[in-house]
Each structure stands twice: as structure tokens, then as C-alpha cells.
Image 1: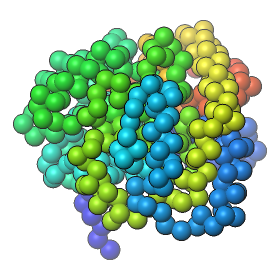
Image 2: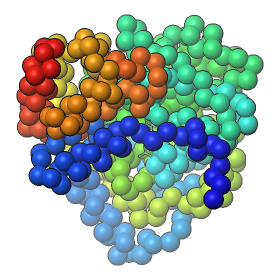
Image 3: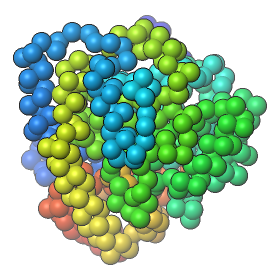
Length: 391
Ligand SMILES: Cc1ncc(COP(=O)(O)O)c(C=O)c1O
């Protein structure tokens, strides 16, 4: 059977191979410390699960409106009013099957074959696949640790070519945890508008903020013209419910609606009804206490790794990842990850999964596991460094 040529450009995540090996090690009776997973270890908040049960019993088993059920679109709009004082029309809120479906919709909406999209390296790896599916061309903006993993306006403008149509940024970002400074975001929005381009801001880690930039609420505070991507996966702990949303400029609604109807018919009905409970005080209290747990784990892991001699260019301001330079130990990050898993049963994600700029130096450690496992992971890493003679 002949498959499409685009498959040749889609690489598997290295971390998937590592995960398979980790599963095998676990099946053989080893305790593996998981610092590779980009998914909350906490289950969905009980009140959301209850709402899900009630929705199922109440018959929420059919297709819904393509852009989402009206009460959820309204509830999401009011969330922006509550958290950021922003008045967003519910009409501009589009409910999607996770941010992944949002990325698919935006690629189809905004890119013609050959159109270039600027995105960051390192960055969320699937972005390039969505662009490639519509035969767009991803162009990478290299991020430097010395700049706190922020790009500059000059970099963006230098890379902007006659084929460039827009920019995709994330705040807080995967894998660096960097949060975009409001001023830079404003400059980017103005620069993109001058070029008649579009700006996509992936805010899927919204709410998971720890640092001084924690006044960041949404790019919508800076511009009304951006496409905002969001999700119930991370802060709301609902990865498996496959639900997200976008806030889109008014003039894009018709196109988004036509694409959403054709590509997906509707987002999952059950998940939408359950998600109505995600913004209520009972669930918000759970989400907030989990954010506090992540903040504690971040300090524990960052202090621990720095104590072992790792270079942590910046403490993340958000998300749940540390992007750590392991080159001081003289090992390539892929080799580092494999040896750490194979010989010490600690799983982490090599930089190569997020791009190729300085990827051989960096490893992403996720603090989506409890303090006991983080402590065990640190102990094992210390032993590894000692055994390798590089500590
Ligand atoms: C930056 C970023 N965007 C989008 C996604 C997709 O998330 P979902 O489809 O679960 O909403 C992820 C998942 O890890 C991510 O890290």
C-alpha cells in the first residue's frame, strides 16, 4: 500500500519509544520514576466527574452544535470576565475537541499550501504536523536560554518572508514554561497587524502560573485580533475528555464554523456538559490547590537538579516543565535520557522532541508526579552522575 509522502516528514516522539521501554521495565517489576509525562497526574476534580455522570444519565449522548453548547460558550466567556476582567462575546468562543482540534481548525482556516507560519524552537512538536497537513511550511524561531527562552521582535521580523502569513506562540510555553512579557506580546501583535498577518496564542497552560509574571491572564488583554487556543486538559485536569476552546476574531467565525461542522460535526457532548462544572467554586478550589502542589514540586525539582550541578537557565513561570541543560555532564541529551531510563529507571524527555535548536543539550523534566517520586528521581539521578563519573 502506498501512503502519502507527508508521512515521511512526521517523526515519532522519541519519548514514545522511551515510554514503551519504561512500560517494559515496569512489567519486569521495576519502579520507574516518570518525569516525562505532559499530563496532570491528578484525576479530574470530583465535581466534574459527578456532572459527567449526571449528563450521561440525562441523555447527553448526541451531537451538539458544531461550535459547542451555548451554556458552555457563555460560561467560558464569563471566565475571562472573572479572571481577567475581559468582556468577550460568547459568539467568539468556539468549543473544540482539545487544543489539538483547535490547531487543526486554525491551520485549515489560515494557511494555503506554501504559506509559512513562524513558530518557536523549542516548541510543542505537533504544531508543525498540523501546519504540514495543510501543506503549510513551519519556520522556526530559535529560542536562546540566555534570553530566558524568549524570542525578540527583531528575530520575528527578520524571519518574516513574503510567504509568511502568521505567528504561533505559546504562553506559558511547552517545554520551557516561559511566559510572554506583555510588552513583547503587544509589539508582536502590532508588528503582525502591520504585515496583515495573524497571531495565534496557545494558552493551554493558562492558570498554571508560578512566577512574578503571574499577572499574565490572556493575550486578549493585549489584542482582540489574535486567535486564542485553550484547553480543559492541563489546569482543569481533563486530558482524556478531549475538550478545549478557542476565542477567535469575529470575522473568522463563519469560516471556523464551516470547517468545524465538516471536520468534527461537534465536540464531545458528554465532556461539554461535564466541563460546565469545571468553572464552579468546588472544582476551581481543587484546580487551585493542584496549582499550589505543582509550584511546590517545581521548587523541589529545580532546587534538587541545580544542587546536582544541572544548568537551569530560567525557573519556569508557568506550565509544569523544567527545560534543563545537561551538556555540563558531557552527554548528548538523547543518550542521557536513554541511560537514565535503562540503568536508573528515571524517564525524562530529550530536547530533540521539541525541535532541533540546541536540542542535544536539553532535557525536559515534567513535575507531573508526586513529591515522593521526585525525591526518588533525584536520588537516582545523583547516583547516575556518580556512577558515570561526571558529578
Ligand atoms: C503547548 C500545547 N498545545 C497544545 C496541546 C494539545 O493539548 P490538548 O489537545 O490535550 O488540548 C499540548 C499538549 O500537551 C501542548 O503542550
